[in-house]
Amino acid sequence: MLIDFFCKCREYKVPCTLRELLDLIRALEQRVVFANIDDFYVISRALLVKDESYFDKFDRAFADYFKGVSSIDLDLSGIPEDWLKKNVEKMLSDEEKAKVEALGGLDKLMETLAKRLKEQEKRHEGGSKWIGTGGTSPFGANGYNPEGIRIGQEGSRHRKASKVWDKREFKNLDNQVEINTRNIKVALRKLRKFARSGASDILDLEDTISSTARNAGYLDIKMKQERHNVVKVLIFFDVGGSMDDHIKVCEQLFSAVHTEFKHLEFFYFHNCIYEKVWRDNNRRQSEPIDIQQIVHTYGRDYKVIFIGDATMGPYEITYPGGSVEHHNEEAGSVWMDRLLSHFDKAIWLNPQEEAYWSYYQSIHIMRQIVHQKMYPLTLDGLSNGIKALL
Image (cartoon, rainbow, N blue to C red; front, side, top):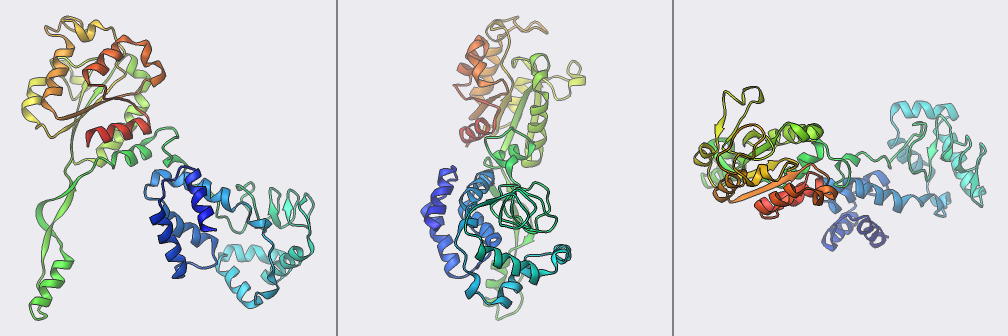
C-alpha cells in the first residue's frame, strides 16, 4: 500500500525519495501512529514533504489515493465494540458528541453504520438510509445531514460532517498558483546562509552539559552567539510609467523581503539605471543617491536584484540623453555595467508576462546586459533567480 501511495505522491510532483519512504515505513513499524487516518496524514506529510511549497500537491495526492477507502470491504464483526466506540470518541469534540446525540447517541450511530455496511451490497445514490452519495443519509457524501459521517467525499459542502481530513489548507503555498506575500517568503528563504554573529547572548546547551560534566558536576554555563542570516541584499525597484500596472506584486515582494533579510537596502529608479537613484519617491529630486556612492559603500558580496518590466524605448538604454526625465551624459547601459562589474551576483526580475518579452527590443537589450539572468516575477521565476544568486 505504501509503495502505491508513494507513487501517487510522485505522480502529483511531490519530490519525495526512497529514503523518505523507508523512514515512513519505519515510523509505522514503531507504531508512531496506528489505525488513524488523520495521524497517518500528519506523519506521512512530515516525512515525505521537505518543502512547504509542496504541501498542496501532497494534499491532492493524499485525497486522490484515499478517496476510495469507502469501497473497501469492511468486516466489523471481529472488532470489539468497546474498542471501536472508544476510538471513535477520541475523534470527536464535545460539540460533535452533542450533535451525535441527535441520532440517539454514539452507540446508535455506530450500530446503524455497522448494520448498513453489512446489508448494503451495491453503490447507492440519493435517499435517506444507505451509504452513498446525495440524499440525507447520515453516512456517505454529497448529501445533507446535520450530524453524520462523511465517506468518500472530495470536499465539504454543508460543513456539517463530524470528521474531515481532506480539507486543503495549503493551496496558497503551491509554486504554481498566483504569487502572493506568503509564497514569496517561502521562495526567498532559499536565499539564506546562517552564521554566528554578535555578542554571546544565548545558551549553548550542549557545551554547558559537557563543561559541567568535565567540571565534576559543578555548573559551568557556556554562551554562544546567535545565528543570523548573513546574506546581504540590494534591491532596485523601477517605479512609475508602465510599472504602475505591477504595483500590487511589487508591494508584496517589498513586504516579503523586509521580513526575510537583516542586511537589506533598497533604491528606486525609472525605466533604467542612470547616474542617480533614490530612496524616497517624494524626495527623488532633492535627495538623489549617486551610483558611484553605492559602489563605494556596499561590498561585492551584496546580492543585487533589479525589479522592473524593462519596457521602454531602446534609446533609453543605449544612448546618452536617452532618459525621458533628464539629460544623462552617459547611456544607461554604461551605468548598468558599472553596477554589474562591481557586484558578484545580480539578477533582474520582470513582472511583465514572459510570453510578451519577445515583443520588446528593450527587454532583449536588458537581458543581454544582465547576462541572460532575467527571470519572470512568478514563483518559479523567483526560485530560479534565487538559485542564480547563490
